Length: 278
Image 1: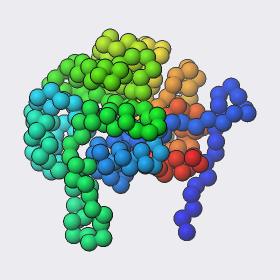
Image 2: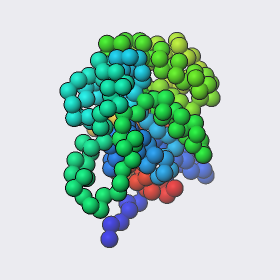
Image 3: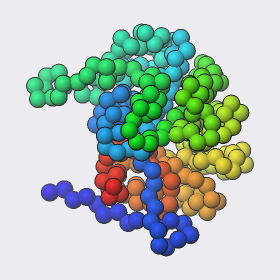
Image 4: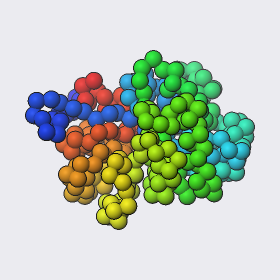
């Protein structure tokens, strides 16, 4: 019988009485067992209790924002071509789900899949899903760079969020990027939106530190926190809000709890919530 690892709870900073835990964010949906960035993955994450959904966005050739991580389509749609040179109608003809379980059609016991849940997912459809859900859900939206469209990605993103009234203070959405220019651009377009400066390598932080505003959230990867413990301690000591990606194990979750981070982004939101004793 598999035992669930015990998790030590971290007390809220400045208090020994109250107990806090990080927000659990579904990385590309519940993508450990479901095809990433599909509606099926996000519905599963919501069913598991995820408190926020993470997605990557790219622009199609005809100007639509779609939830796709890679610049090309080989890994998730099994076809040649780039997202940026393909229209939304052309993307809609592709299967973005079969790569995750290529033998499912041969499994007589596999549950029947809604074909629409495996199509390319537009950001607008994901926003509509969140807006219509029966509880509060937040969004962590990453813009991918470099891209041939440059700053148009952030501009279209703010316009789309504006259609939902989510381009201002109190929005359930926050925007993330590894691109410093992209985060600055987003802040110029929507000054009251929360932003996350993603940090790929620990040694990048000393360079970034004087260039980011005090109210920016910092998003280091768990591998860097594991390999360079001083990075996390420094961020917390400096009073930074920290969101960590991609946290999939009890050991990595414990690192985040010990630091007192605000959010953990996971491929396995249901498992992380189980560990936290939801």
